[in-house]
Amino acid sequence: MRFTLIDRITELKPNESITAIKALSLAEEYLHDHFPLFPVMPGVLMLEAACQTGAWLVRKSEDFAHSMVLLKEARNVKYADFVKPGQMLIVTCNVLKQDVTTTTLKFQGELDGKTGVSGRLVLERFNIADRTPTAGRRDKFMIEFQKSEFDLLYEPTES
Image 1 (cartoon, rainbow, N blue to C red):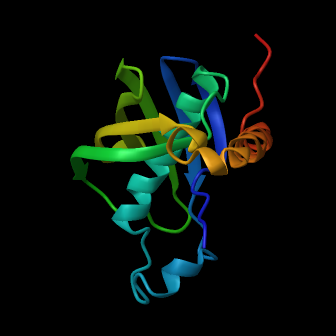
Image 2: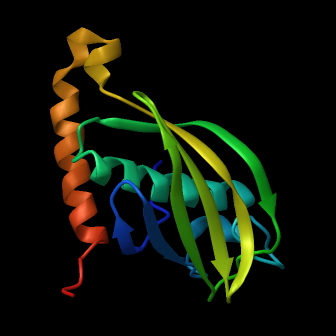
């Protein structure tokens, strides 16, 4: 099963920052179990929303050069509030540093103008062919899929 935890990318400055939103609906399957009488978005999914947001920033900043952008490390993650159905989680990621294979980001998830979650992420990027040369044809497929998904999530505004 795969969860897409970003509904829309609202701002993007390649190599700098990104802002995305997740509107939590009572229709989210996992809310029936988490928790039946007090449905809230699980903290790990709040973190995953931040990872997905940061991964879109990395992909777009390097023009989709790598098929894989994965969480390597989450640091200093602090949860300050619950995301309840009807609320919108606004996730912002800012690049702190970058090297050949990793990007370190500071992230914050806001709810109604208040911080709900924050921390730092280290995302690793690579191509499948770098690790498994015989599976390299998957890189092209993954990159094309990610480009099409990105086009659905982000529509730049004319300035």
